[in-house]
Image (tube, rainbow, N blue to C red; front, side, top):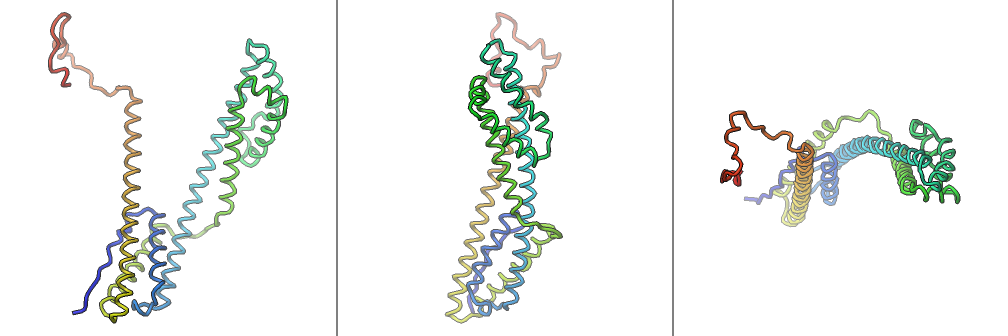
Length: 287
């Protein structure tokens, strides 16, 4: 009887999209090292598999691009808060009882006044105007005034946020513009089906192979199982991290509540309260 050798179940339906694509790509790289004929496949089978993997990578990039848009939006909100803080500090400095601080504020105010409503501009105009504002505030005299009233931190943070926004915008513009792509659920199902078929062919090829070919196929199966095992381990670690993050957030929310959800004593419990000078209920320590 010819020997058999099993490939582990991928359990790919549990994986995140990024991890799913990564596993597919790694399996493809392993399988293509062996001649298709040795594992009972045709070259067109491998080509069809590659098309599905490429399509799934495109879908994953599209999802990533959506995440990039969200990061840009959040970074823009951050810039707006920093601008508001900076302008507010300069206006407050004008009212300071300290002469040097109030004079510095009055000298800086015309500069920021020229950029009023900066937070309400569209993101592209706001980006270039923030650059202009920072240039104006970091000239010799304005920079000294900024130190006097203590807004250097806001200026530096605004510069960093604007630079980060520009970097994210460049990344998004370089991302592939993808349209008319199938849903991730659809393409994952297609990839899983063709991958399962290929792995079955490999198991079958091991049974019917010559001794020389069986050794090569055995090594391939070992490598495939290693990839599946590593992917499962990564998935478990990610799941644990996400659970810990959720638990931490729940604990923080409870602490913010300040014990507001504690059960109030019923009226009938009033008589059970220890009277002054009386020994406390020994059960209280347990509670």
